[in-house]
Image 1 (cartoon, rainbow, N blue to C red):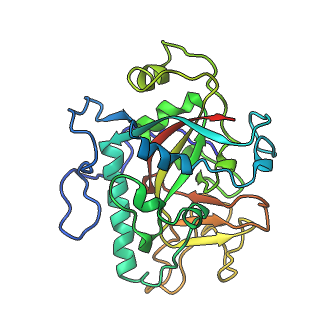
Image 2: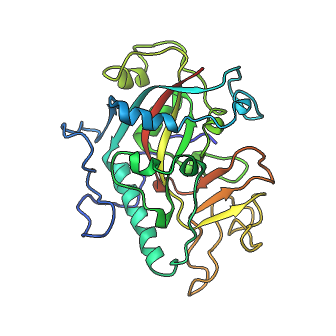
Length: 310
């Protein structure tokens, strides 16, 4: 489920500017972002120094079952360890990605107010374990009415910069449940897909960006993102073929695993597609649920975490 950054030209024509009152997220930079002048590329990483915020981010690395660590068919770098410990964290402040995310988020808010007023509410394992976690996170609050969640995405050192520059791109991703960006609610799950950053390399583009002013390099760290994601009206499956809700087809076009099917009950019919796919346990999955989004603009990679296996 690896994702690479999208090109800078990708998007839906979002323009910068304030949203009208009550419209939700503004396309302008959130108020908790740094007030320093933005670099020419219009994005930057801000080291997280607050102990309180770091303690909140550590919760995303909670291990529910240590026996799930370091093993499994998807495990890239095996080992024996029982916990995951946050070493460094950075907040991504990316004007273009934030604007794209805000536009897509507002589109789903509008759909919920219209035909999708019966949008089911979802709850992640993180929310059940830490009920106040969404409120503890800095910045604009997530909207539970559109299933806006904080989730995890594991990655490798050589793809971190591409994701920082261009976001998570469904076009370069694939897995058991189609061509999508794969997200998780369990640190054990994303830990399967990461590999360690072993040695400090001053000429590395990643190291130049994150260790110049954001702390000292720690050998053998692993990287993941804490992302905001709008799940909207999700489709659920166990086998990637059949919807659990009504027995319909998960994908709208036979042989195409990039386009989800239409939500039943809209007028006219076949006008609004499911926004995300949730793979439940019991079919292809036995340990961890997975969350798939087929449009990377519904995801904002807000925090980059560097963690150690302990």
